[in-house]
Image (cartoon, rainbow, N blue to C red; front, side):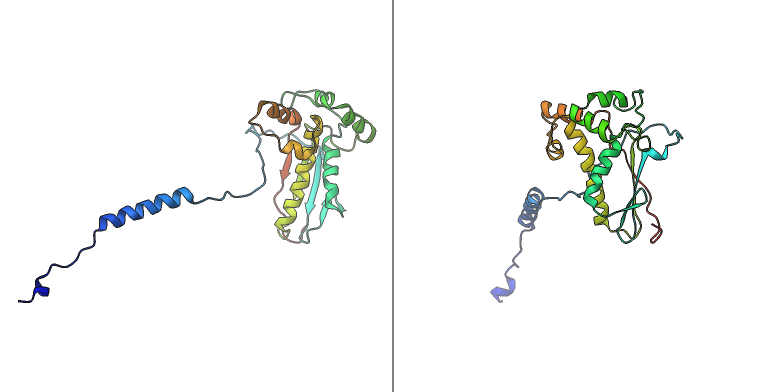
Amino acid sequence: MSYQRNRPGQEVSAGSMADIAFLLLIFFLVTTQILNDKGLPMVLPPKTLHVDTPINERNILKIQVNSLDRIMVEDKELQDISTLRNIVYDFVLNFGRPNTNKVVDGMSDVEVFNSLPPAMKQYIRQNLESKTSSDGPSKAIVSIKTDRGSSYSKYIEIMDEVFAAYYRIYGERVGLSAEDYRKLNRNYPEQRYLYEKGKQGINKAVSLADPSKQGDG
């Protein structure tokens, strides 16, 4: 009888393979970095009861982008997008008809104006307070409408300029540049105080209208 024929077959232990696979799984879970989706930092307002309150046209700054990425502000073509932040800045701080009701953060437009630094007050008195522009920060709305043929990059450019205007306002209220204001770390009480004080009474009131059909804008 052959010795090789009666020799039992070799078996591979599956137990050690399972241990190795489990360790590899743990390794990849610990070392793999999961990238977060990038986007625009927007904080939605708290849910409120729907009220059909008419909005005066002077309190809406209309920004439109057509299918060729041309920007229209109040039906006039904007040649240089970098000027948009100044337009939004002046619109929000116009104080044409400031209200005395405590609307945003328990502050009225009059109280917001009184809280501004002297330089901002002087600028408003000398250059703004138009009766044909916004009544005050509590009513100022920036409306952005794109065309279905508009590029996403142009939309982002516009949002950057609009947000830059608000950050400039917030920063100037507390003696900071727009960039320094954005860098405030709210984990530190002193910096959180400046952050909250800068935007108190002035919300980012940005309305994103439904895109129009290609070629309509």
